[in-house]
Length: 288
Image (cartoon, rainbow, N blue to C red; front, side):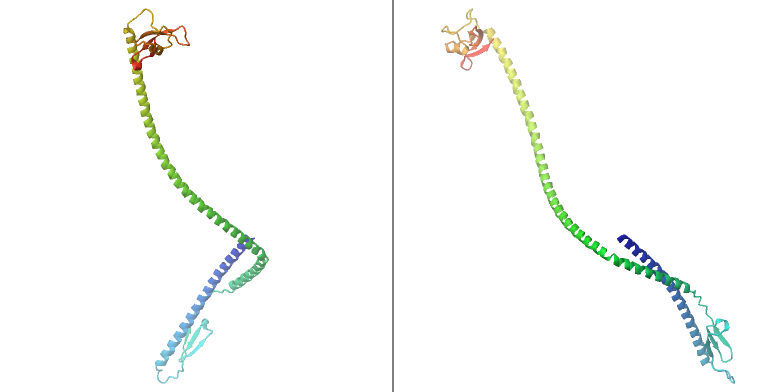
């Protein structure tokens, strides 16, 4: 209904503008015609005044009984606008053709359009009065909705400010995390380098231990080959007991390196071993 009302108002405005432009055109034409007529009358008056002025200062010939010129208007000769009759009987006719068109029909049509427009506006005012209550209710409802939207907009603005502050805090925390990440990456790189160094050191130590073990085995074999045979039977404890290992043999008083027979608890039959009685206090059992 509001759209219809706006459409009617726009149509009325366009009609009023069209009629106003037409009225302005006709008014301009009428005004132009009036100006032309006024100029013609002014020219006629000017010519008449000029003639009178000339007759006033020009002396009449002797013996003439010519009277003053007679000025008349609306004569029958050729639709003369002004006629000047001189004393000698001659006439001066001033003509003008206004060429003003007849706008009576246009004025009648304009009056009819104005009457129709007034009638339409009257009915439109009646319709506006009938829907005035509905429009007022719509305006009240619209005002309430605008107030609600304003409150909601304020709430959204507060939430936006809170989110923006939170975003700023998150940005600062993200920068801190990025700095910490860079530091951790650097520490990890350094740890990897240190780990590589440790692995290399352990590998070198293992290689050295393996070399030393190989050297010890070679030396042991050489020592075993050079060891003198003191008796056909392996040595035992000096007191005749059955030793469990080389430490028992060392405890019994034996101080010479060599091959001895030991009888461990888990193997009562016994077997032969090489006993080192000189290294680090002696009593070391070396399997053959």
